[in-house]
Length: 54
Image 1 (cartoon, rainbow, N blue to C red):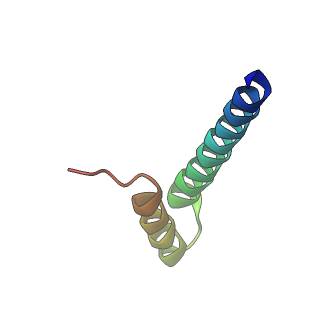
Image 2 (cartoon, rainbow, N blue to C red):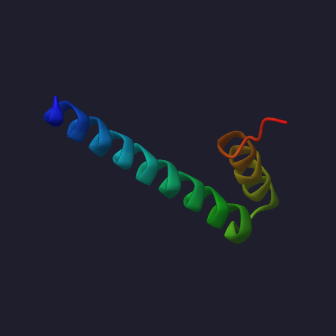
């Protein structure tokens, strides 16, 4: 049982790390992209990734 919990925690941590990388890349692109269209697209991706439920 302990091994299963460790593996689950490892997978959850890896998923959180990849999510953080994706959000960071989208945020940097939203700020630093050369064209307006790419910045706009990156902001739309950020809206999807960081969606808030109200």
